[in-house]
Image (cartoon, rainbow, N blue to C red; front, side):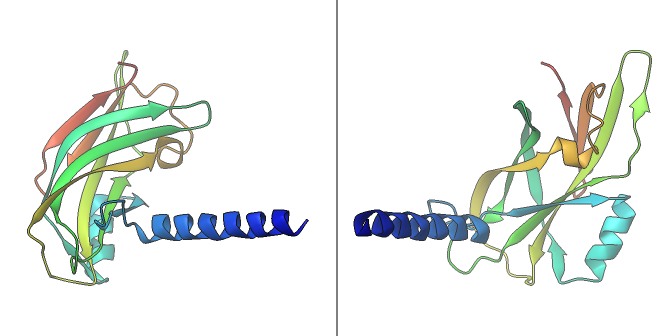
Length: 169
């Protein structure tokens, strides 16, 4: 009985360590991973919120879009490149922004979202080029109204460049 309790305690301790690592956003290579958030409203609203906070906008590039589907969730994967690295580099936060509108024709329903990246509580930049995948729950973003969305446009709010994901391909 004591052996089972010790094994259970050890498993809970390891589980706690793993979830703390995930929560702090540090990946296996020691790089700080960016955190993500969703903003419901216009990009102007998002930037008004940012101006009242300790965030500083950063330069980044979108390098790819994909969707991962399971029985219970749909995830928008946005591949980005930005300055970052290990050591004293500040944390980053990326927001997707959606104003609730669609562009619709007889055959398509397009949702356009903005993506904005920010340094958190710092104006220090880092030299390393970091590539990572940001994940957003599409059911949460589009409030479970995914069934007839045929295309998702992601606008880089720093450069105004648009990348498109045609759903179902």
